[in-house]
Image 1 (cartoon, helix red, strand yellow):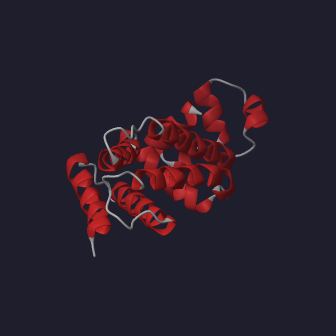
Image 2 (tube, rainbow, N blue to C red):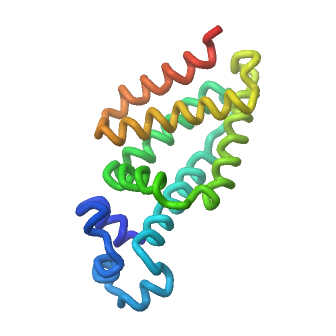
Length: 175
């Protein structure tokens, strides 16, 4: 998996084939095919691995300091995930739209939605925002802005964080 990630980051999607991944990993093509019959299978596994890593980090969010701090942490984790390996994230974001991964990610999406609802239910959050639609909107705002920044190679973490927070907290306080 790391061999494929390295090839995607450094040489792009077209250079990432089962042959190049096997060579980079130092395994035979036959061994690779036992686990990954195609480049798409490798890419799909990388997408799932990235989402799993993201969810593990999000599970560390603490609610003791309130919903606002938890929401700030969620934004920071989302940005860090995108910008830690930006070239890889950009490719995987595009491939996530092309490959049939929705069913594989459905459980993660439901967990993330539940997490957002829990954050919105905290006492320091504005009244009247504890709805599934609000949680879905906020997740879409965060993902959309972070993914768009990655797509245009905008790696300035401080300003991205500020823009996403403005959008999220503006949404929550707009009357």
